[in-house]
Length: 155
Ligand SMILES: [Zn+2]
Ligand SMILES: [Zn+2]
Image (cartoon, rainbow, N blue to C red):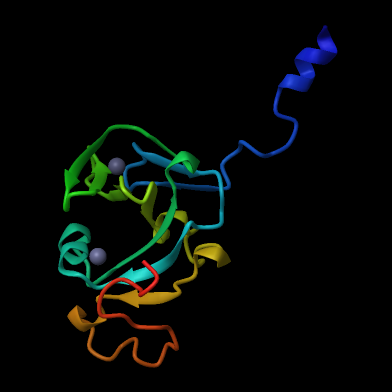
């Protein structure tokens, strides 16, 4: 009996968070079970991302909704039909957006970076979206990443 009970418990690290981040006040935590994004990390220069992040651009990676656990009080805003952006209800930091059609949560990769270090390698930026709307001039022109006028052609 005891053996059976033990076998039913997770024996590997498989259910434990592989990425963990938090908002500025610490009231909201984001745990992701897979370090490999379902949607490649991208800079987004669109008007909505700029306004929602209060920044020149956003840098986010998408993860399967089932792999993401958000804990704490959040407020949400639907910036488009399928996309629900969430913030910490206390400090207002963006803590990820749920894309209901894609079944993915897009999380700012900066939330997973330790102070003074870049986020883990699978979260390195891979492309620029809405590059024509950028407000950063030629700052990224030589970075070797593909630059799209909207979403990548495969989407
Ligand atoms: Zn907060
Ligand atoms: Zn955007």
